[in-house]
Amino acid sequence: MLRYSFIVLAVFATLASAVLSVWFPWLIPAVLLLAALVALGIWDLVQPGHSILRNYPIIGHMRWLFEGIRPEIRQYLIESDRDEEPFSRDERSLIYQRAKGEEDKRPFGTRERVYDPGYAWLTHSVAGQHLADSDFRIRVGGRDCKQPYDASLYNISAMSFGALSGNAILALNTGAKAGNFVHDTGEGGISKYHREGNGDIIYEIGTGYFGCRTADGQFDPDKFAEQAVSPQVKMIEVKLSQGAKPGHGGMLPAAKISPEIAEARGVPMDRDCISPPYHSAFHTPMELCEFLDRLRDLSGGKPVGFKLCVGHRREFMCIVKAMRKSGIVPDFIVVDGTEGGTGAAPLEFANHIGMPLIEGLTFVHNTLRGAGLRDQIRIGASGKLVTAFDIVRACALGADWCNSARGFMFAIGCIQAQACHTNRCPTGVATQDPLRQRALVPADKALRVARFHRNTLRAVADIVGAAGLRKPAELKPHHFNMRLNSGETVTGDKAYPELPIGCLVDDTCKNDEYSRRWTAASADTFNREDGR
Image (cartoon, rainbow, N blue to C red; front, side, top):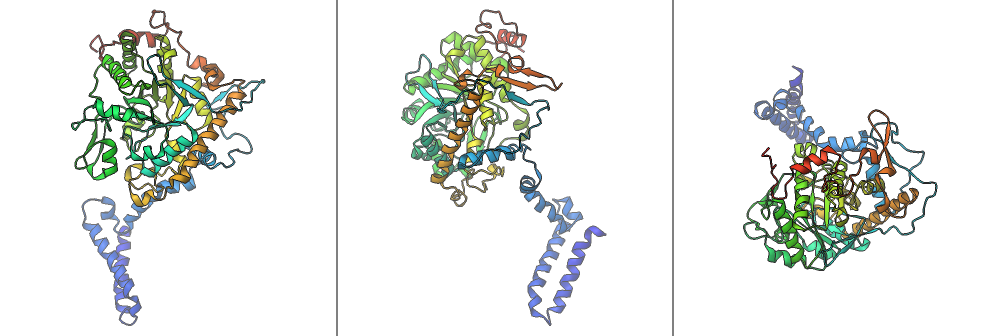
């Protein structure tokens, strides 16, 4: 049968070459190669693991070859400039150009399908403004904060040392220092590469309490204080969940724990490093607020907040009710969209768990407005925010500042190979392999980090000025229009209406989705009061 023809041909070729090699000795290497193919084919016929190889010996291996190069073939030869897998070539090219300081303009007009559902645009003004200063700053720190921080409008989102290489962390942090913006450590703790870069950092505390944990994985206040009082640490962020895998813990196998990772995280090298799916330092909304207040005190009064991907909306309202009941108000909240990135996540979690950024951001913004707390809390946003338009849209819908992880990864050389979980990153960004890491030169890539930040904010200033405004904080939902599935267009304030300030507290909220959940929320428990 035809499917066995390749092994049959290999057998005949081996025999013929063996005979001819008697007179032509230079054929001996070919005989050995063909004999190896025959042996492979025989093994394919009897091995139990792969049906394809049993039916198509030798030639069946081509399937794995093509599977192996499929992503590269698709990325370089097949996908269009606008296919998002997950970032389009247009987006990646824009980041590379801004990071390198190259021309980032486009000829011949838009390639967007402006009449398709979902298309959005900013309304501009005939009385535009020229904004000479694009270094937009946001003061983070409420009434109980003793060391407020003036954060940039655009910062590096949470990526842990361990997920990223030491050279990548050093390049990002050095670039953040050069550009005067802040770098979130991720939950992997503060590494020596963060300290060497000496850029401003947000110390993120996850469920593993890395860098501030006891031997059995509980929160250690003394170790936290040692880390948090460092002048390099500007803010403290408690991670409740992340967009790419909300409600899911993690595990770093012992085999992948290097001495540097063990030092940064405060974990032993001879056992797996576990990040539980939930916190052990608090279990109720009130306990969360008390924990935040404790962190603020231990850090010397630095801004303290939390990050979450919105899940059960009532549970976020439980936290807000606890703020009002306890009088303990965080200085900031970072909303992470489900479109956010990660080094590794179960497919179902990455694709179908958690709320997208726009819906999550507008919900958090509106809940704080309805509870009368919006003026006391800054909101950060993260989740595929890599262009100036992404940033101004997030600001219009409620964000005070924006974070990006993969945008800055592209700036230091990431090519979207999507091999982050294999330890075989081709550019040295997401690997602990020393040989692969050496491909990334921190001093060179740090300049690109600072340049990407600066050029992106310059583009933000141009867009804000085109709208006739002086700063991103003046952007409102009504500055945007968007096209619905019906083909009609609506303004942003119609698609995402803002709740009146204090309406949830004084029981005047006319939005049933909010008022119903607010009534069901409790400051004392994350469970429903009615038992459901």
